[in-house]
Image (cartoon, rainbow, N blue to C red; front, top):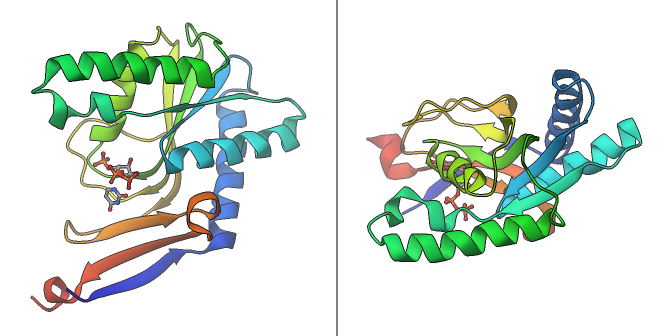
Length: 194
Ligand SMILES: O=P(O)(O)OC[C@H]1O[C@H](OP(=O)(O)OP(=O)(O)O)[C@H](O)[C@@H]1O
Ligand SMILES: O=c1cc[nH]c(=O)[nH]1
């Protein structure tokens, strides 16, 4: 299948969007008191770390930044409850370790992911967080929101709204993993011609 790929955000656009989101987070939360950033593996982790660096540059104060693997909490794994419970414990422990054992209890959590689509990944992330403690609030930041939600989930911070069809796919490349910063949209030629 031949794919056509279009760049919708380049390195500069990504940098500017993340910088704007850092300012929006500070504005909405009136600073960073009681705020914790949590990136969803894998690319959400690097986005959260970049925002943490930007916030430190702006405010001069470090912000705690952790990481979460939601695989165990995905709703397509719910058939095997034992696996979910065992792997869920592991994910919760990994999250706690990444936070240096700082509790999320009564904190304002800002979740990061690269793409928001159906919302199922974020639902899984919220379940994992709730197994870890009782945050005061959960906010959501995404680099690209492509619509097509299947759950009532809405981001608080958006790098770019990207209207898409179900046949398209958004791909986020980040320097830390992919050697470049770029957001692309692809669509199969077959679908485009149909
Ligand atoms: O809103 P949703 O429908 O849950 O889609 C969004 C998720 O899809 C992608 O992850 P994916 O599971 O495709 O794995 P990847 O991170 O390896 O791309 C992306 O990184 C988001 O986490
Ligand atoms: O287009 C999409 C949909 C889900 N996850 C992605 O990374 N891209």
